[in-house]
Amino acid sequence: MFTATLSPRNSAQTSAIPDDLFAAIESLKQELNAVLLAHYYQEPDIQDIADYIGDSLELARKAANTNADVIVFAGVHFMAETAKILNPNKLVLLPDLDAGCSLADSCPPDAFGEFKAAHPNHIVISYINCSAAIKAMSDIICTSSNAVKLVRQIPENQPIIFAPDRNLGRYVMEQTGRDMVLWQGSCMVHETFSEKKIVQLKIQHPEAEIIAHPECEPTVLRHANYIGSTSALLNYAQNSASQVFIVATEPGIIHQMQKQAGDKQFIPAPPLNSCACNECPHMRLNTLEKLYLAMKNRAPEITLPEETRKAALRPMQRMLEMSA
Figure (tube, rainbow, N blue to C red):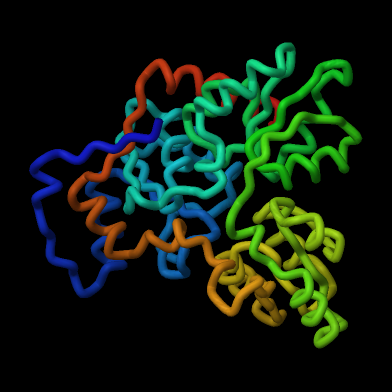
């Protein structure tokens, strides 16, 4: 399970926040020989100061290959756990311990263990958006970038359990023609998009292309001109001849879209309610101030039982090998 360690010294220590957080964080990166990894769903300031920005697959690769002594992960806990799985001897910091994941939480290890036992002879392919405990029960880890590619490499006579996201699993089944047993988990952000409001937006902007993450509900995906991982959506928006896009994923990615294709218009797909429900509340818990304090105090630190880490490492390594 996810754990974190705060030393008594650091937990009791209060640090003044410097006026120039960008400069202070850069200084700490040099002092610690630290690398700052940030997901596309982080707030723009964090994206701008990160050493590497990416989706889950890109960040896993960076974590696997870094020469830094300290990894600061501006994301959510399963991402920081992944970095620790790949780097047992490095200090891995997460700015806010409450930055969890609704999708990871929807797959409790005990319940999944029973589910797996009920389907003997199945291999388990788990989306990287899961806890270290679920990774440890898996045969292969995948991301939204490589799930289709990995499933196509599995012999057709080999039954598969796909966990934890049912929408991504359903999409992979459609793309590959494979029948898989799906764990019924989902992401709270990607389930909030309103099909009705997206259609209304399309009527208002008939020239717009709808681009969507495969974690979205099928009712949203059926309207999409393009479906892909976070990084794939970014690349598509850059290279498409279209000038207007309705973006059905967490709107943090729009910051990078605007930086890389500033002459185009990006409209976040609206949620069901008049709220900011399409923003991941867990991702948005990280702030520049918390990032600074985590580096200053060397805490909160991500730790994992070695047995769990080793078991989770095997399917991670298999993913990296199969997606090379």
